[in-house]
Amino acid sequence: MKINLQPIGYVNRGILNFLKDKLAEIFGEAEILRPVEINRRCFDPSRRKYISTCLLRSYPVFEITLFITEHDLFADRLNFVFGEAELGGTRAIISLYRLKPEFYGIRDGELFKERALKEAMHELGHVFGLTHCKNPNCVMFFSNSILDTDRKGWKYCELCSGKISGRVRLRL
Ligand code: ZN
Ligand code: ZN
Picture 1: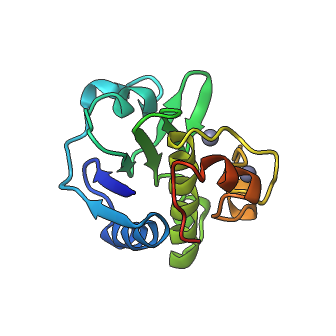
Picture 2: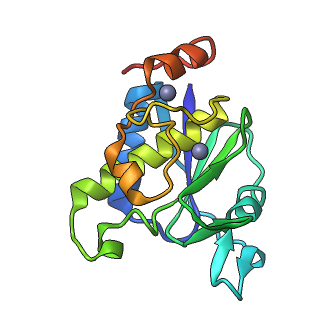
Picture 3: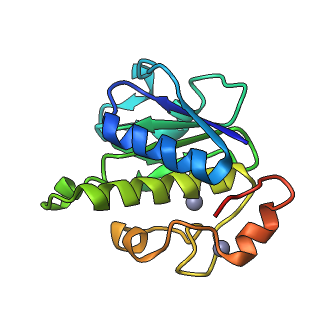
């Protein structure tokens, strides 16, 4: 299975390359596409964040695509979201904004990469049809805060892997 990584505007190259290598390892193939410009119409001036659903639907795709932005996102009643995806669809989006250790006053490049991988795996899991998992170690566990993200692993648990095994061959 091929995963396209679609940067929206400027995105940290180190993170992009890291995600590409990891996702290629896990799913078989991954490619970084040329960046697209951010859709300014998805910006909510009063909340000073982008509407994730709007961005997700702004760009047509033909293959499974993970959009990546450095901007802060929100959706509906949620003050912020780490990402969003079309359940059983083709598109997912993650924001690096709140994954940066600098956001919490620390510097840690490895932690940043790990968080990005977890959020990528989580949103892609939704694309593959997975809903949230009750297992706190599973990457499909819902992250209410960065602490949940840091606590969970980056893999799908056995139950979740089993559910998508017909569609996705994982090389974990
Ligand atoms: Zn989710
Ligand atoms: Zn699970």
